[in-house]
Length: 403
Image 1 (cartoon, rainbow, N blue to C red):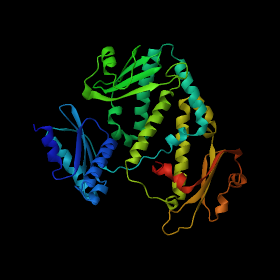
Image 2 (cartoon, rainbow, N blue to C red; image 1 turned 30 degrees about the vertical axis):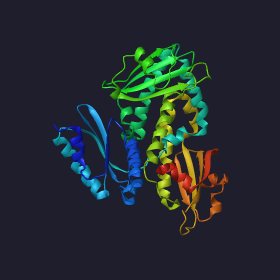
Image 3 (spheres, rainbow, N blue to C red; image 1 turned 180 degrees about the vertical axis):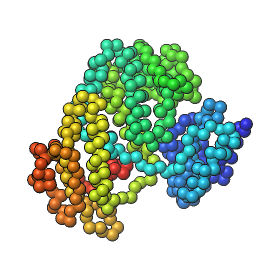
Image 4 (cartoon, rainbow, N blue to C red; image 1 turned 135 degrees about the vertical axis):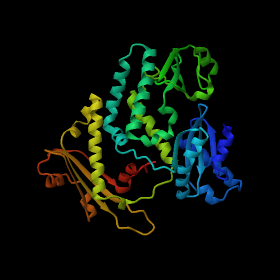
């Protein structure tokens, strides 16, 4: 079998490429490639066209159980498609285990509807109470921390797999089983954690109390407390300190919502690594707005039953809903991005119904509750939810343009 260096060199001769040993996600590789291109451009080694070109292929493979990640820059979409077809059989000929291959840049990931629903201000108090309930269910610190990490990993994978599967290639290490080592200094209120890849089928977490001072790069303390895996399996380490609350971890979120926040940060990082999106209010249409409204209603009804406290918050959504959406698009001006106004009313009624109208007069988007009865004479009570927003703001989280 050829050496790793020879295999990598044969993949893209005379192509601008970067490869590293380790399970680096696509975003990390895009960031590394961008820095490399910038340095080469400043040194005059590549032209501006090459520096600004985002096209390429992200590839991830293993040789002798060691994972390698890389990006090969391509000239255009046609060359990218050719490489996606060409590389897999060539790697098979070298007995290389291909794990991932995909074109870049990638489509941005919208935070709507799952993450925007759980970001609603009315969920804040429920999430705080759920966190308190979670920690109150444990009497032992070690057991509490061990279970939190295990639950957090499980929720994070489930959310990625069901809500944002396209994010998986950005965080490959976190999607597989993990070995986690935690040192908890109760007196100093410090929790140091090390994360390692695992070849086992399930996550394993070890937690130990310590009187030693712990921080980043506390190799001696961790090595004396645990039988650590080899360094090449290391993913990352964290140190957390909190002087408030009954315990150092008392203010940690419930593992489900901690997973939600962690994934949101990963989506932000993912989207910033992709080219920006050019869009304006003319992207919207009656059918699209109807689709997004319907999608949000269904997602709320899927999320709410997960926790009783959330079910209470979203109770009006669990009843039949009637939604009136009115939107206006500004007259286009050459050289400017066209915006507009959108207003929506959510009210309970005898059955689900969504009505979307594009209006010709901007004043028709002003908040007028009596419009609800005009359009839905059988609606019940006043709107339980409503908003008025610029069209660009409304569209941003639907398109992944909110970062």
